[in-house]
Image (tube, rainbow, N blue to C red; front, top):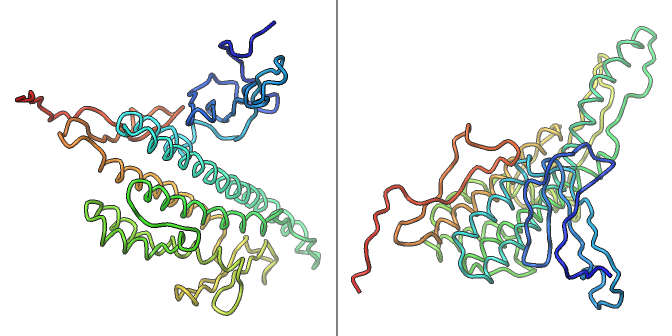
Length: 341
């Protein structure tokens, strides 16, 4: 009989996916989660022990499931978990800290990929609708009656879900900071971003670059956060309105937009902002926020003797199958000094 404790190999096959590429990376996250990264998909391996932890059924087999339709070729994967797993394996010697960081980073990566899904869905539908709406109007405007225009399906649900998960990404970034520092966080104040920045300025002077970066980013961080709050707690000075594609005067049509009044907390009102463009901007900002937080915090953990440094790869050296941008290597200026003792 097959012993399920024996080593095993598996071929990943997904009949619904066009991703027939080889495995790019296999990562074990804290011995709790085994992930397989292909170019355009991610799979979670479910061992027999995870399925049958009580070991009551010795014939239980190993299996796997697809958990993402993007993979190592996406910068939203390569430059989050995969990039910093490599860096932490070199820089972070404390096992507990490394495990906690990897757990939080993978959770952040999942949330970021969920936001990517909602943004890409809205963008793709909007792009297709533009051509269809042009055809409908051009074909029927001479008749004086234009049929209903194509809409972006699930627009409101997708846009609101993006904001809800996006705020969790922001909170997760500050959780990462709290693992590197003693930044106090709890369920009641974990989203007080401006107060967190002030705490860092006062209590972590060695991370001045981090507090400066966060100060510069606070405007979009607060905007995303308060737009999310307007969904859950609407009222005066705290509202969000979403408009789908609709016919405009002169037989024109408008793309999906949202308007928000978040003047209660941040003194801001915006009208008729293209949703697909703002979500793209938020995605870009969130990726760079995660990356910058981890780069700055990791830099503070490099050996004080100057032996290691963080480096950025040249564009021509970045692997398109896994576009990791930063890595840790020996400092070219480092000179070994023997211990006098």
